[in-house]
Each structure stands twice: as structure tokens, then as C-alpha cells.
Figure 1 (cartoon, rainbow, N blue to C red):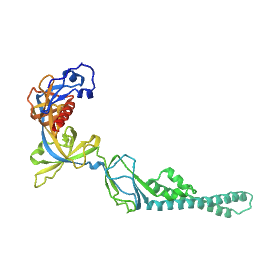
Figure 2 (cartoon, helix red, strand yellow):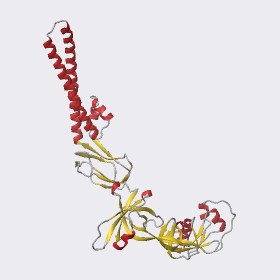
Figure 3 (cartoon, rainbow, N blue to C red):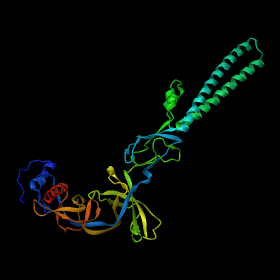
Figure 4 (cartoon, rainbow, N blue to C red):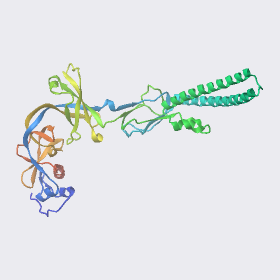
Length: 395
């Protein structure tokens, strides 16, 4: 199909997409002018040194260092569950609130100790007044020194009782801090007229210690819990584990700390980077394989727990292989494809078998020859045009 002619004006990528012409055979026509306007770039397939690798399958799992199992601080009664399973919570978001029975008891003891402290202060004030009067009477001989010393001892006893009660109040105050009450909360407890707060202060709200997905909820409102009860599980999947089994004969070529590339069927064009952080010291007797743990960054949380994954593990040695820039690879129907240049404006969709990706280059094991020119930058737009046309022909 001949290319349509048009002036070489500045056009956005979206506009350039509309100038592509395709055929049901997977041929896409991109006028030279549109190639320039749409920033279409091409490069030849070349033979270059590609680091050898081992390809295995694995499963995406939670990084156990990023799993928070939320438990209550003490015995209590669940009031509200603020989240649902599968929801994302940010750091500080409320998760669960419960009536903390032990906190309620601690508040009662704190209030009682404060009342006792006020009583001790009043007694100390009275003894201070008596002692002051006794000193004046002693100076004019109106009282015996023995009586004055008795009154002084009573004052010292009252002071000791105040000090002891202050220590008791401080002990209960520290206990309240451990339950999560702030200085402002404790100040409100000192205010006798704020009885409403006294009744609600035992309601404890547990908040997300870090961002994550709620992967399990084990309680409902009205249930009684204690310090050993699991309430919910919060999992941060911004970084995950990918677990795989490596056969015994391959273990020698997989050093700890080696980099890996991970792909999943859901995103055939995406590559996730990681490294090996653990190799099991025990082989499975039946399979003669050891489990390998890869820590993989998960931008956008695209990798989901339980996904099957293909893992490329670099082996450390290099082989000469045909390769193209990784940006040339697109996915159609779950298979990798490239767009091969057949003339100045004609490109053909070609399925390829890929191998290792290293330093921005993708190994091509089948489907291309050295010297073939493929679209690199802009290959996604060629893919979109081709799929649109193929879908149209299918109807």
C-alpha cells in the first residue's frame, strides 16, 4: 500500500500515529515525513557480547521484612475496623480501634493517684502553716522546743508522702505513654471537668506503621482480643521476593548478590530488576534443587503476590549473540515481536525468540538476522497501528 504524501510539518506522536497505514499481514507503512515527526528511530541487529544466563520460573512473594502483623497492645473489645482486605493504607492511617481494658484500668489508677496527690499536697500545706506558726512561737518562748520538733517531723512526713505520691503518679503516667497517650491527652485527664474524655480515653486506635496493602483481616467489631491476637496484616509490596528453585548443577554459576531480570505474563514488555539475597543450604531430595530468593524492586506495585515469573540470572561469562536494543521489543498476544524495516517506509511485524537482556540490549535467538534494521524508539506506536488494523480485519 503506497504511503500518503503530506508536508513535513511538526506533528505530535499522537498525530503521527494516525498517518500509519497497516495491512492485515502485519505490514505497517510509515511515511518518511511521519517517521521524522514522530521521532521514529531504527537500529541494526548486531552480534555482540551477551552475558550468559540461566532462566528459571518462580513465584512473587511478600518481602517478610515488609510485612507488619498488627496486634493489640492489651486486652480489649474491637470497636471499628477502618480498612478492608485489599485496600492500600498510607503510613499513619487508622486501621483498627478497640476499647483497651488495661488502658482503662491504668487511667483509673492514674486518676486515683492524682486525687491522692492533691490530698497529700493539702496536708503538706496545712503542716507547713503549723510549722511556720510554731517557729514564731518558739522565738518568743510560747512553745517548748520538743513540741516544735514534733511539728517539724510531721511536716517532713507530709513532704515525704507528697514525694512518694508524685513518683506513683509519674509511674502511671509513663504507663499511659506506653499505651500511646500523648502529653496533651494526659493534661486533659488532669482536668476534672473533662469527664467525657475520661470515658473515651481508653479507646485505642492502631495506625499503619508504614505504607502497604491490607493482605489479611482477622477480626470483626465486637470481638474480644488480647495481646496475642492477630488483628490484620499490612504488606508493603514496593519491594518483593521472587522465589525460585535452582537445580544442583547450576548452583556453582549463581553467586550471592548476582543481578536478575524478572518478567511476568501480565506485562510482557516490562522488566523488573533485582538481585539474589539468599541461596538455601538444603536441597530438596526429590528435585535436587535449592531455593533462591531474589529481592526485586516493584515500582507502581505492578507485581502481585502469587504471580508466576520468569527469572533471568546472569551467569558471569559472555557469549557472542545477535542482539537489538531492548526498546525494539514489543509484545503481541503474549509473544515478543519487532518491526523490521523492508523499505524506506515499510516495516513488517516479526515474531522473535528473545534471550538475555543486558545493558539495554536484548539477545535474539531466532527471528532476525545480523544487519536487519528494526524500529527502536517509536515501536509502540507501530504496534498500536498494527493491532488496530488486525482487529479490524478480524471483523
